Amino acid sequence: MAKKLLIGQAAIFAAIMVFAAPCSALTVYGNIGCVKSSDGELISYNVFGSGDVTLVFVHGWSCDSRYWREQIPHFAKKYQVVTVDLAGHGHSGQGRQVYSLESFSEDVKAVVEKLDAKKVILIGHSMSGEIVAKASTLMPGRVIGIIGVDTIQNVEDTMPKEEFDKMITGMKTDFKGTVKNFVEPMLGKDMKPELKEWIIDDMSAAPPNVATSAFEEYVQKFENKGIANLFKEVKVPVRCINADLWPTNPEVNRKYIASYNVVFMKNAGHFIQLERPDEFNKLLGYSIKELLKRK
Image 1 (cartoon, rainbow, N blue to C red):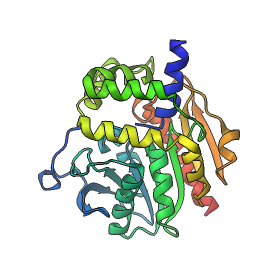
Image 2: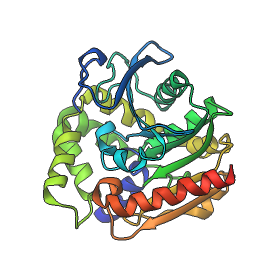
Image 3: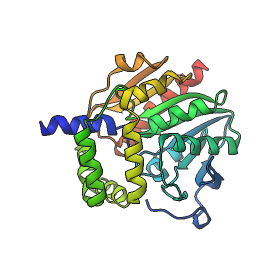
Image 4: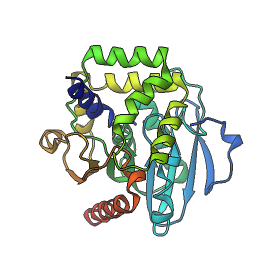
């Protein structure tokens, strides 16, 4: 039963997935920038490489742009690569009271419009699969496709209320311990120990108020098929590169997503872009080329 509950949590929060400093305190990393989101919150981003096609990488829950460090040098050779720190994460501002999927999607939109990128592929890990989906609906004509990274397993998924309440209570009473227990089972069994330790320590160091709010807001979106209905609004192709740690249901997803396909990395954990970057980068490259060919 415990294993079933763990898998149930992971199926939803596979989609969920720091230190914080103001934009003015940034160290030079690529071409650095800040832009105000729709509510005035400062959003930090970095730009690498150049090209007609812009790849916008968006991290997951309690992470930041460093989680794309294995992708930046590879893809910046050919494309303009942009990494975003969502509000409350990394170097972006922490002034919000509520960290919602909608506000995060506005962060992505603000960066894309600041750069005036015309041909954009949004790439989102974990929770950001849904964030980039929402962002695509805010920028018709700019976004040509979405690539999810271990996310969008089943858009009809929900989490039992008692499990949700347990997670929220745990975050409010023992944030570090709850995050550790939540994240640890998601890490691939063959992942290097030092990488496992870094991910757990880093995510456990996230601002508790930001992480708890984002968690609450995100999970509640699954009620009444809220996430499924969101994807009905998405007009661009959706591709996913998922681990096989928990089930993905393409048939359910295709009921709501006009163009959906998924490929799998076997025997991998949730952080596939860090665990096996060479294999992941090849699959991501194939997905990018396929979206560009469709365009």
